[in-house]
Image (cartoon, rainbow, N blue to C red; front, side, top):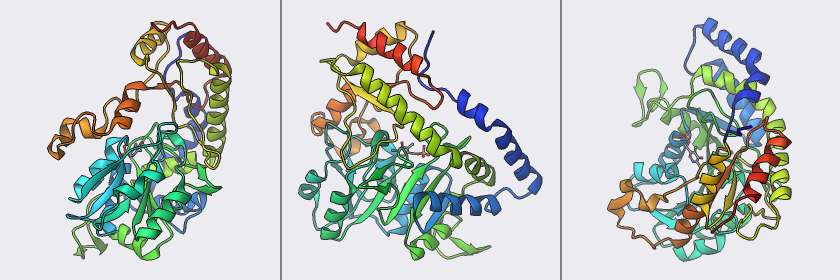
Length: 368
Ligand SMILES: *Cc1c(COP(=O)(O)O)cnc(C)c1O
């Protein structure tokens, strides 16, 4: 039987009736932007994430952008970002005109290596954006300590790690501001674009509410150059249906990962995802590394097994960032991870038999 890379089918069956009911409720309310559903979701997501405030926005990228705007980061300021990040993290820094300073990851976890931060800090450094890549929490104690020592803002990119913990504390609750995405395939996903910011800082939360809505607190009174980056009532209502199921879906992801780890242990040419003792991993993606990536991907495709690559080209080698003048070889760890990573099928509803089938096909692969 073919195994897709990802499927919504099981999730959608579980929430179909409640979701359609929520959508009808919004339809009938005749109120579609910034209303009761957004307010309720913000309160529920803040409670879930153990933060004082949540501000719903239109996407994860908008959340990152608004975070940097709210912190007053702009031209001349340097922002430390992972060299192996998804491009959104870099784009947010570009939007505010600040300088991107890439920091190489820890190769074992693909997450920001706190020990490498110190060497990247200059008198112009203003902020760090740690990305909890693939669903594993970064070592936030070390990152927060470094930030505090140098007086830097921290903006977590929590798009892939809803519900993960570092030293027992939830991601999205460490940074001064934290951005997340509810893109449909994220661990908590809307049925379209959506995102949020979380914070314990009341003044920053208030500023974000102004920035997301035309710089306006009161209709037609524009205090600052704001944006239209609001979360829709419809998406908020849908997210309210899904949020209570997230812990169960996370446990499923972790069980699937445990099965993969059992089945795939001891293959000399395959590096399994490594977990820090102090971090939990919510397996947004199950990413392995192998020097035989292209051949393995082809082999699995021939067996009807879907895989993906997150991400094939690091931001510094994208045409969009050519103007920064980064050379090939300048961030060798990011480049190495980009050429060896492979994401295996994993979604809530995937079965033990499907994991076994993927593992069986991997074991049948003969690297040349
Ligand atoms: C998905 C994602 C984003 C962007 O979120 P959008 O809602 O697609 O704008 C940012 N950072 C990371 C790490 C992501 O995975």
